[in-house]
Image 1 (cartoon, rainbow, N blue to C red):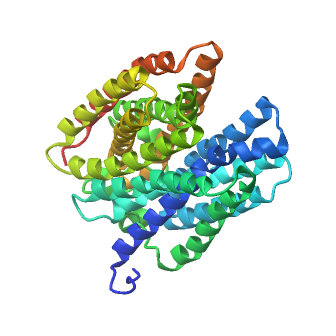
Image 2: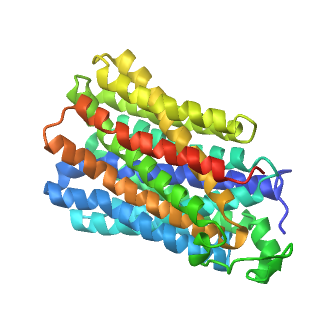
Image 3: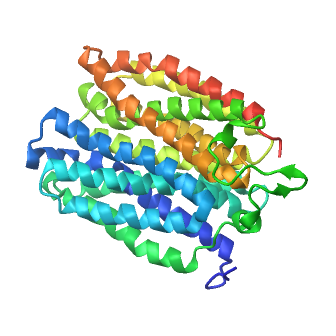
Length: 408
């Protein structure tokens, strides 16, 4: 086991590296949406080709999460995470030098493979390197770096003309490529994974361990109900999150705000969510776990209704959007901290990866649902109100899930 540097323990340094990787992931996840206006102005793509560009990275995320989680259980968290970070950094840079919309879509697909491979491993690695009873707080803190990255790339875009969209992808490529070799040198492998070693599939504590990376094992030994609830929660909550991330600026502009005001409110959505994720991680570590989740689940539909009925005034809309970001990302933090607790070490990578992959299906469905409702002539207020059944169903699944988790 490697020692830390500069007086920082190896485990703490690993969490710092994972936090930095999550920040880079947040930048690259939202880079396409932020750069969209400049790309559309330069290449003049048809709506269908622009849609392919937007969905390419999400498709890559789906397969990356499945493959990355499976590999992480077989060859280790560190190798797959370092490779994934280098992969999405490299193809983000290649996105910046693409010369047509088709090559942009191809590079975003490969960027998505790296992004999808990194996220479930970040969650598993942080959980397995954290001190006892600090797992949820550490995972939530690292997850919170993702919306911070989204806010950062939005701020970068506000300081430059739309024609400079390539700079966004250069930033999204250089940072992870600088980070990857540092992680290769000083990132600590999962302590639980090392402890398990080649004994995966043997016995531990008198109980049979599931075979390393076994997909079927996430449904065996009574884990099926938790797996299904986790998948449903991820799907429904990411559907809502990505519908809001993609359509909120358009909805706010349609209701009378300027483009800059809508962008500012979107930054507030990300920042509020990041702060709420950190707070939620602390609450989930204590006795208020169930009470805090109930409070967020009740607040979310109320905030949607408030936004649907709010007048087009920046102070009012901005406050509601900030609170909405807090609620949506707090539930996301709950799911990402819950996923690694659902599975034993030998199948944690594939279990978390599968849940993230199912969530990515929701992130594809959400924006398309928003487009369908807008195309059908529904105004902003109607669209937000029609999200209520999805929000309520996702909250019910999350509440049922938390009751099935081990008390420890």
